[in-house]
Amino acid sequence: REGPESIGDLQALAGRTVGVLGYGNQGAAQAANLRDSGVTPVVGNRVDEYATAADEAGFAPRPIAEVARAADVLLLLVPDEVQPDLVRDEIAPGLRAGDTLVLASGYNWHFGLLEVPDGVDVVMVAPRMIGAAVRDRYVSRVGFPCLVSVERDATGHAWDTTTAIARGIGGALGGAVVSSAREEAALDLFSEQAVWPLVLGMLRTAHAVLTEAGFSEEAVLSELYLSGEPSEVFDHIARDGLFGQLGLHSRTSQYGQLRALAAADVTATYERFSSVLHDDILSGAFAREWSRPEAGEQLDELRREAETSTLARAEAEVRSRLQH
Ligand code: NAI
Image (tube, protein in one colour):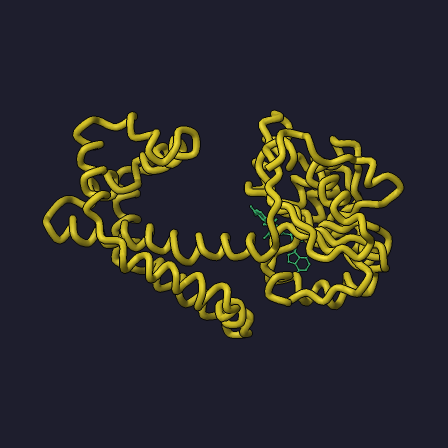
């Protein structure tokens, strides 16, 4: 981890045209930050409402294929599932040896889904932050952490380009963490497929146990999450530490939490997490499954099931009664 702004020299971009492909969550924020850092990018976007927003912000967007031909350093900021086809059809034909493709996530590259011509550097500058905050935290100089890596160094100076881009988008302010596409993708997928399903499943199970015991929907859901208290706790976990934040709770709560944590049998969770990491994620099994054409429809079906579940229906009712 490098200290604030101790890495990255914008000189590495001197004489090179930077293109931002996509003007969504990350694209809009990173383009604005680059411009304020003195590296005004050319924005490439298809004709849609994002292009209108880019136009209104003074970026005069051009077709993606045109920017891919014109720019030397290209930030790929369209959704991950769109990238493989877009790179093959519109971006790769415009790339020349010596150009740099900058990824904001490691998934497609690590799982071999991007065909990038030889001679082109491939690097990653992945903000650990949602797009709106990438902009806000640049403006306020608070910064945000970024995972950075060089995936293919065809030119011999890919690292300089990587750190210059990290600095230009404000990613050096919050500390740049040297990583890899493999690590970024694995950690992201692990949070999504191991940690968060357990959190969601735990809340759903808690709701079932408590309402079956006769406690009211309003009281149960307010206690579990509708009050917003969990997000306050997570905020303090980030600032004060997983256990440092315990001091904010009553002593009764502290005793109850630590006693139950010490007694918890996490063997099954450990085994489940290891299996998700090795068998699903690192083996590439999940990436192959998600690349199937019918996977999108399966996601829609899973969302429909979740949104019509007992918990979702109870939540909607309580929300309307409590006017949340
Ligand atoms: P987004 O969903 O906001 O992207 C919208 C943009 O993609 C628009 O400019 C739209 O015109 C363009 N687009 C959508 N479909 C297209 C298509 N079929 N052809 C051409 N252009 C199309 O994307 P977001 O969330 O900014 O993600 C961009 C990259 O940043 C991804 O690699 C993502 O993993 C990464 N990332 C995103 C974070 C976030 O908080 N959203 C955080 C860190 C990384």
